[in-house]
Image (cartoon, rainbow, N blue to C red):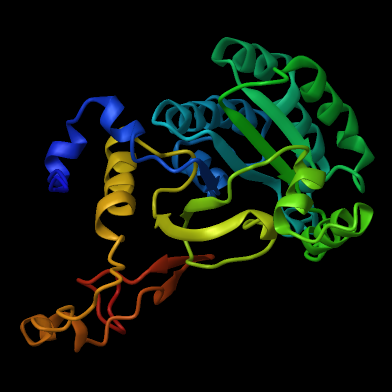
Length: 291
């Protein structure tokens, strides 16, 4: 007889081994709003201090994902829009990426934590090829924890990589194409942790590694993932969203009692503009109200 799932509060306070037992193997992590987070902390968002302030926060969040049972974390280090910006940020982003992902401090952290780190997508950005090689040479060849960092210079680049990988070995399955592109079998991602606007794009969601992805968008900018929040997300992922049942003969028997939940005008994803940013519509706000 199957055991009843724990309550949310029990799961939040459970030993870490219980959380590890339900963790997804592969997570896509898109912590947007890092410049916003720096600005809120009083740090100029286009300064050298911003990058040095952000990097250890990135490491801490990814370390927590690995500690709670995730084996592969996928991040997009540079998106096409970032390369289309102008000004100091665009002038410095490649150097910042090199230092942040593959500089001396980063390599020390990876060695201490036992991570393998790979940087993909540098074919069209020669400025970052040395960083990719540095990570390949100076991080573990085998590890239970792999951080995959991807550089996407153009919107169509992910599809180009998929097609080229498939053609290179005449791949007939997704698994064969994954082995060409990543050099090994990587489990498809089943959980996405994002920020801000609910949206999907191939430069964030690697096409080859999409499983049935459960998506969560936090509203705290930057690397703000905390243990309680992660436990809440894993609880929802493991126990609340799994509603499929092969036998649906009694699934709709009590639907009338749930009427209030289904006859609603709630739209997940609606929001408002606040200055130069989009912000989600909270229940206490109504159209035309100021937050």
